[in-house]
Amino acid sequence: MQVDELIKEINKYVEELDFVTTRKLIESNIEVLKDHKFLLKSNARELLKLINDQLESGREPLSRKEMSLLLALNSYANNFDLTSIKLIVKNNAKLFLKNDVVDYLNKDAITLLEGLGVIHKKEMIN
Image (cartoon, rainbow, N blue to C red; front, side, top):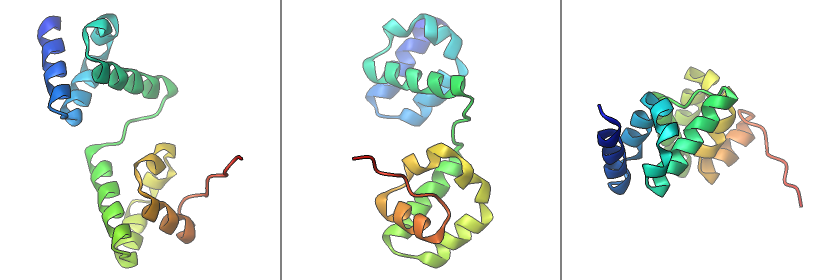
């Protein structure tokens, strides 16, 4: 794929708010896009910056399966379904060792997981 075609495709997906496809395109062509980031729309540039920062810090991005697990966990937390939450935690313990998992959880899920001792409370600095 040519650079101009890639840029047009990424910008199109950003306009359609299809950030999953945009992220995959950026991840697979990150080196080319670093040199041509000025052609990207602002949301695509921010996504490129975020992905680049994650890769430089050594963090692996969450997979689609992990994202769907977190989405299900958020749903279970909204419904206060502790049995399902415990089942997800039991079967996917390594997922909760990643630092950026908390960023994808809603307030209900964070509160329940802190209460269960799965994640640590963030200290509030006043």
